Image (cartoon, rainbow, N blue to C red):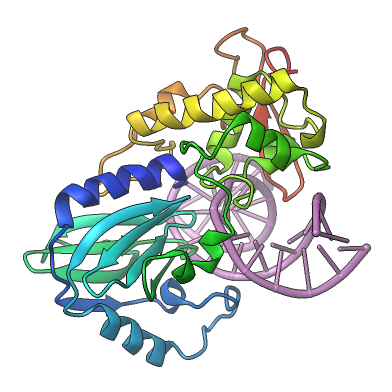
Length: 289
DNA sequence: AGTTGGACCTGACTGC
DNA sequence: TGCAGTCAGGTCCAAC
């Protein structure tokens, strides 16, 4: 599941690989991969032919001038100051492959870069690509509404305290709220709660100052460590980086998808609880209070 | 307004 | 072996 560390890994790899490359070919093979906002659940997605043509026109001939990231999204800036936004969704990968090598079954969008090509591979089609005009906040009204980057100076214990004040939701859910803080999903929400020693079922608005401090520190530690490990590749191998390599954070997971297995700290079997949204949170009943 | 639950999707897994 | 059913989760949206 690509979250911040996975998107950051891909962005760093692309930065060293494709800056300066020119897009000479655009192929869109699935309508959902360029669906527009507000049409998420419409299938068949309306106006595919014209949107595909517009998408290709916006990209063909452009040079890639930079690679960035916001939350879980990878941002490719283009020489005309437009930005290609890539949301990886559940199963999205961005692969750099030599042109002509066998195409992945779930390759949804292919951008030709001369001898190589950038492939957006996404079996579940939860991901999407979009070209936005410009590079500033005006180009990203949705990102503008996002909370701060958790590894930026804007994300402080004071910010976290203010953002959670009065919230009736649980911390496991709040951490995944992109408007509160950007880039955290299931894997890292579970791991952050564990390292903070807090049950994910705790009410977000009722944390003491020391708890908030622990949660803040755990978030930064976990995400930094996961970036160093190039992200998490689960047993199903869904996530791969831009070179097709697996992330190494899996061996460091303390709770995520370890239901029934002994806690790596105290040996107590890990529990799983369904929170609102239907997502199962994993936690240790002894280490987390 | 904040919060919740359903829908979208398909590969992997389970059970008969 | 095969087929139906279940699960997984990022994000949007409708409904409390």
